[in-house]
Image: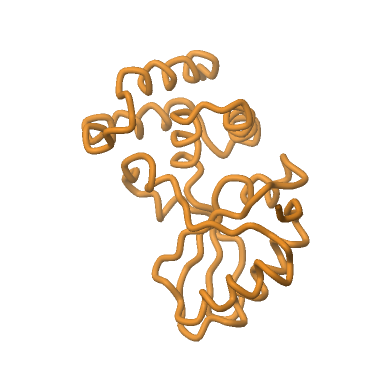
Length: 176
């Protein structure tokens, strides 16, 4: 079991990955890492990343950072669990450039919908924090969910009707 990951460790991770990257690329931070950097959580159990395009050399940095920082790092993003939302890259907020690597928060609408679908207690707390910090709004969330709803058939692990019900429940609580 590795130690919990704080903002300091996330910043150190970004420094290591930026140093090890030999080619340009973008690393998207997801879930708890975004929550810690945005300030609604003090720590997270792991750092979820998406690499696109994958900077050469970054996997050596991931290996080294896991050991030197005593953190869990996983390659996971919302589009591994739900259909990718249209325009997600454009909505992914810039964090920093370190070396040749741009670090961004993976689109908060995508993160919110993936968390709503999974539905764990911490997921719902995170979605509430996204609304509170105005990182997402109900009108756009509905629009983006509607855009992917017909593609849910490609994700057999998702009960599309139940997902729809969960999204509607969140939207009712956040009418503009």
